Image (tube, rainbow, N blue to C red; front, side, top):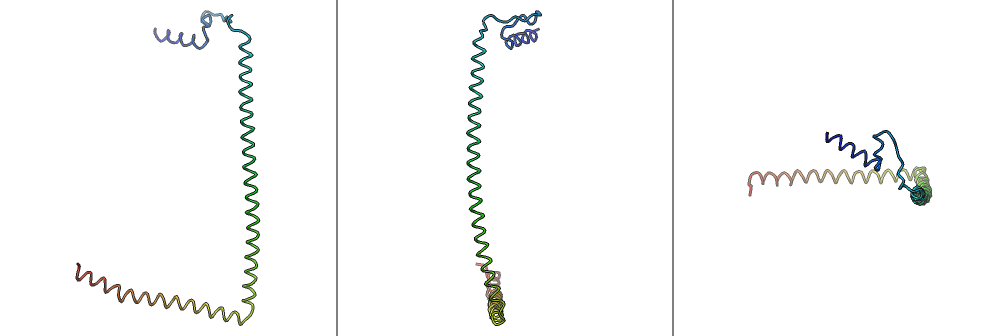
Length: 145
C-alpha cells in the first residue's frame, strides 16, 4: 500500500501537480505564463551561443596547433634534406678515396693496424685475468680473512 502512495507522490512531483492525470484529464495550470516559455527559449539560445563560441574558439586553437606542427615538420624536412646533402657529399669523398689503388692499400693497412691493436689488447687482458685474477681468487679460497 505504501508503495502505491510513494509511486503516486513520485508521479505527482514529476508532473508538477498535475493530479488530474490519474483521474483521466489533463489541465494546464493557469499560473504558467507565456513569458516563461520565452525566457526558457532565450536561455537555451544563450546556452547554444556560448557553446558555439566555445567550439569556435576550440577549433581556432586546434587550427593554430596544426599550423605550428606543420611549420615544425617543414623545418624538420628541410633539415633532413640538408643533412642528406652533407651525407651524400661525405659518401662521394669516400668513393674518391677508395677509387685509387694506393688509397685502398693505405686504408687496408690502417684497418689491419686497428684490428691487430684490439686483438692484442684483448689477448693481453685475457692473460692478465688468468694470471692475476685466478691467483687472487685462489688465495681468497685458501686463506679466507
